[in-house]
Image (cartoon, rainbow, N blue to C red; front, side, top):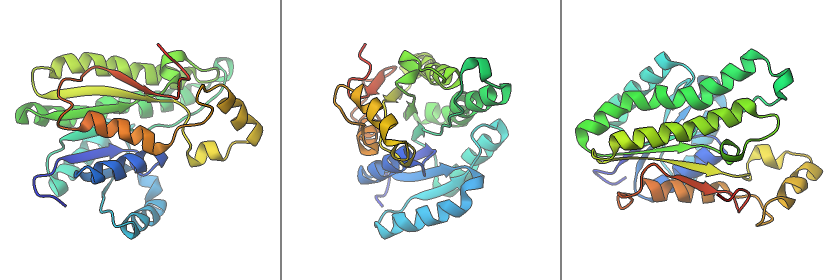
Length: 249
């Protein structure tokens, strides 16, 4: 790894999109740490072994981003072990889909806490250090459904829309401090979850995408790497859609 390389923390870094982001940032010369949920320890060991077989070295830290206390502890552990965080990618997310009529409070709160509140819980402990150093890149992974809404995803759509509101406001606070804050909003992406869909459901989704295919995790990672780059100094507060034309605004 390069000396004086930027340190990037990717929450949800061992998921389908998160893994691609980690790989891409390593390729761009960053030191990368992937955050995973403590309950995933067994699968993360296999994930880490696979990355090493690819010749990629990625740090790992456990943390429940839906908990403010756990998030603070995770950031402290990361910075003690690896150094100050220069790039933060808030990628962790879950779904708990149902129609609003049938949506239980627990399914509302779990999605809001993991997908939206986590952005505050994780960003707040790194913000002061970024201000002091005069550099930071914060990239929030939202969703096309935060822009257009989606039946059965009132909780998810609300959380993902809220992420970009957070982005726009914080971008204003960081604008004179060397910190950029941006959103990437993926459309449907080929991950183990979407590949496991019934063929008819998957084909129905693809037929509604102007490019007639789902995106790849690597295409999302390319957008993140672009916004994280040292040369992207004049881009802040934007929502970069990567959706194959599914939603155009």
